[in-house]
Image 1 (cartoon, rainbow, N blue to C red):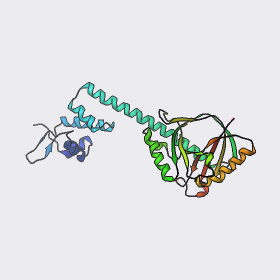
Image 2 (tube, rainbow, N blue to C red; image 1 turned 135 degrees about the vertical axis):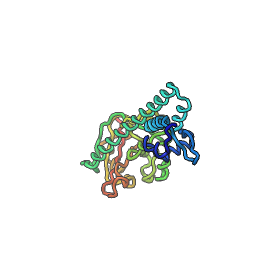
Image 3 (tube, one colour; image 1 turned 180 degrees about the horizontal axis):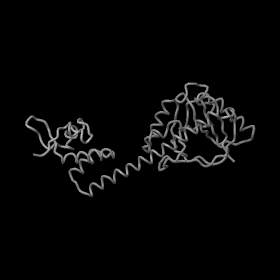
Length: 272
């Protein structure tokens, strides 16, 4: 007589919960060897290795459907295909995790730098290299509009949500400074300096050169008076400015509950 194991005994030997074993039975992935007269299912010793294989493949994050297909057609070629597909997916996940690591490091460095800024409310001229960005030209008039625009931004190229937190900036038309509301923008952008793969229809760039730059305490609603300072500075120093500005809140209420710590950056390209 062959060894007959109960669900509980099999569970203890292989390390798969009785709940999962019963679930695998329900979906046709792992059937018992037979059923006793009292109605209890039993498993023979051959089933131990089969369940170990399922556990191993699930540990590799291989889907139940793929495992089921392999078990229904057990060939070396099939098994290699399953592992190769999973290896490709694993490499993609690793690439994404490496990207997240770089973004987290950059974000932490950026916040530390901003927190220690000495030139708050001081206008400076920065010489910056060409910058790759993702750009979406979308009229924005109120906060709800920019939330909708960011959703379009994210969906346009199936980009991960992690890409957006804290790094979205907005375009401001300088010609509308006297008429615009503080939450009115002509588009939004995301700096790609973190190394995100720019295989996107939204890819664009900011030109290299001199940029009039101002960090100030506050958020978008504090920006209007600071644009006046920038315009006055440019006129006083005979600087010709481009038609748009970049506006980005670096520290806001999502990062700190203290309004005194809010920091916003404005940049305007100087035409040389």
